[in-house]
Image (cartoon, rainbow, N blue to C red; front, side, top):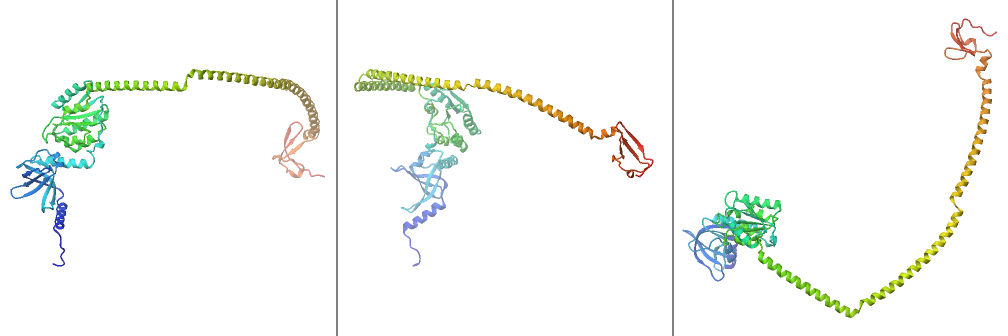
Length: 444
């Protein structure tokens, strides 16, 4: 007993509360409401019971705005929340986050879960929602063409500004395929880029009837649209996920038309007011500037006298400039005349005539020198030709000598170089002889 840790009541209840909250983070409980009470704080306190047990429950005021029904004693409901411990009384209780009447409880819970998920991702934040255009050039109305919502919207739009064009994109707004139709219509509007604002509307209904507008895929399609989207689904008391994600939530189709279609009368009045304000502003500014000019005139005096002074100064400066130009031109003319005389002494035409005469004389002397040189070369050539002829073998052959050769062309100088029966050739001054050696005769 001495070694056992002693806790205070507060410490024990805090430990129990921690165990309960960790062990039961979220629970879904079905039961009957009893002992319902709403004190001045606005929170709802009640007991949730069945045939054999009961549990205390509390629904805080901020969560009540999401209720689809008003809780009453004896109502069979489905609650979703977390278990906690109220330390002051030592009682465990259910902290209710969502409450739905039995029968619609599953859908309501799905609605609450998706709402929390999208809220955590920032889909409902006001910072991501875009403002509606002041005067849209074309409105896309995604709705069922046979419902009453389209007639309510068109009637109000025609009353406010009939000239604004409205394109009706027919879709199913309930049942199988409705979600796909609406997503396809949103995608079509974004791909074409012809609309300034998109309005999705339908009439009221039960939670089951409006469930198409609580689907996650449709919510993400609305959030991903590049064109502002207005949600006008159901009656004023109806609330869907599409309403939370849309850039603007209208409680009814009629209110949606009032939001996106400006009043022609109001616009005309605003333009008239702006025109009057603009006219008055211009008048005031003109009066101010006139007054300012009048004051400056008093300070500056008559500006025409200053203008006359400027004219005299300009004329004097112009006369001085003309005189300076005349003197400069006269000096340039004298310099040019002197240079012309110098240039005349070095006239290239005269130098060209002299050079032509010199070239002509040199050409004549070159021709004579070439003729004399040719004659000397011709005489030397004839002399050398005569000397060459004198020592030529042909001249020797002309005096009766001959050249004896073997078949291989070797010249025979001795009888020992040939053998009897060998063929030899003899070259004469005129022609030659082919012969055969009969006999060799040694010298001596």
